Amino acid sequence: MEGEVSIKSKIKELFNHGLIYGLTSSLQSILGFLLLPILTTYYSPAEFGVYSIILLASALASAVFYFGASSALGRYYYDEDSPIYRRQIVSTALFVTIFGAILLVLFSVLFGKKMSILLFSCPDYHLHLVLAFSGAAFGFLLNTMTLLLRYEKRSKLFMIITLTGVVINFIITYLLLTRFHLGVLAPLYGSFFSMGLCFFYLLILKFSDLTFNIKWNHVKKILSFGLQLSVSGLLFYFLDYVDRLIIKDLLPMSDVGIYSLGCRIGVIINVILILPFSLIWAPIRMQYANSNNQKFTITVASYLAIIGFIIVAISVLFGEEMMSLIFSNNKYADAAKVFPLIMLSLLFYGFQNIVDFGIYMNNKIYFYIIISLIGIMFNILMNYWLIPHFGFIASAYVTFLTYFITTSLIYLISSKYHKMELEWKRIFIPFVVLITLYYIVNFTTIINYYSLLIKILVAIVLILGVIFCWLSKKEQKILRKFLKV
Image (tube, rainbow, N blue to C red; front, side):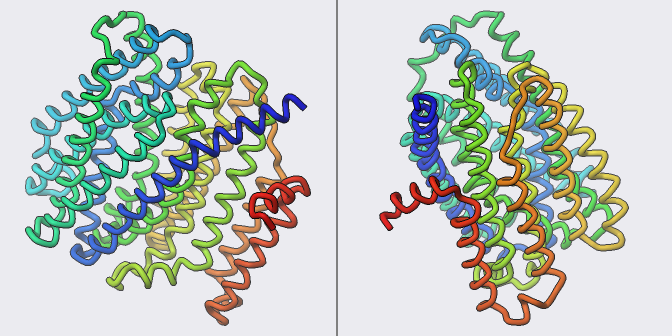
C-alpha cells in the first residue's frame, strides 16, 4: 500500500509540473507554429530550404560548442544535497557554457563566409550564419539557466520566461518579415534578440546564487561527462538533419523546403509531449534514482506510449485537412505526407529518455556515440538508395526506421546495466494499430473515399478503444472520477 501511495505521489508530481511545462510548450508551439504559415507565404520552397540548411548548420555547431555542460549539470546536480555544492556545480556548468558560447560566435564571424560558400556556393549568407550561430549560443546559455529553474521546480517562472521569449521572437520576426522585407534574416534576428534578452534577465536574476569559487574537480567532472554528450548530441543532430543534406544533394532546393516544413510540423509532438515530459522526467528520475522506482517507470512508459499514439493517430487521420486550413501556399501541400511519419519517429525517440537509464547512470555515454554512428550510417545508405527512386518521402520512412533501430539498441544495451521491464502489450499494440492506420489512410481508398465523416468515426472508435481496451478497470474508474462521470 505504501509503495502504491508513493507511485501515486510521484505521478502527481510529474503531472503537476509537467502540466505547466506542457502548457508552456503547447502555447510556445502555437505561437511558433503561427510563424510557419507566415514564412511559407513569404518564402518560396527553395528559400525555406535555405533557411532550414542555415538552422541545420547552427544546430550542429551549437551541439559542439555547448560542451555538454547543461546535460552534465543534470547528471551531477543531485549528487550532494548541499547548497554550497549545488551553487558550485551550477556556476561551473554556466561558466563552461559561456566560454563555449564565446567560441561559437567567434567561429561564425571568422569562418561564416567560407561556410556560406560551402553550403550555398556563394558568400551571400555570411551575416545569416553569424546571426544563426549567435542565436544558438544564446539558446544554449538560456537552456542552462532554465534548467536550473526546472531543478528548483520553479515551473511558473519557467513558463513566464519561455512565453516572453516566444512572444518577443514572434513580434520581431513578423515585423522584420512583413514591414521591412528582410526575408531569411527576419527569424534569425527574432531568435537572436529573444534568446539574448531572456538569458540576460535570468543571469541578473540568479547572479547572487552564483559563485566564482570554482573547483577544478567540478570542471573536470562537467567536461568529462559533458564532452561525451556533446559528441553524442552532434551525432544526434547530424542524424536528425542528414536527410535534408542528402535531399539537397539529390533533389532541387524546393524539395528540401517542402520536406523541412513537414519535419517542422512533425516536431509539434516533441513540443507538446516529448519535450515537456523530458523536462520534468530528467530531474525526477535522478531524484529517485536510489529508490525502487521500477513500477513508476513502467507506468510512465505506458502512458507516454498511449498519449503519443493518440496525437499521431489524429495527425494521420486529419493531416491533409490541417494543412489546407493552416497553409495557404499550395506548393507545400506534399508536406502533409511527411509530418505524421516524423511524429511517429520522434515518439520512438522520446522513449530513449526512459530506456537509457542504465547507460546514463553508469556513465557509459560512449554507447550513445556508437549507436548514433550506426543510425547515421544506416540513414545515409538508405537515403542515397531510396531517394532517387521515391523522392523525399523516402527520407520520412528512413527516419522512422532509424529511430526505431537506435531506440531498440539503447534499450537492449541499457538493460545490461539496469534491467527494465515494460508493459510490452500496452506499448506495442498501439504502435501496431497506428502503423496499420497509416497504411490504410495513405495506401488504400477505404477511408479517403468517404472523406471526413469516416475519419471522425475512426477517431471516435480509437478513443473508445483506448478507454475500454487499453485502460485497466482501475484506471477507467480513476478517469471517470476525474471527469466526474
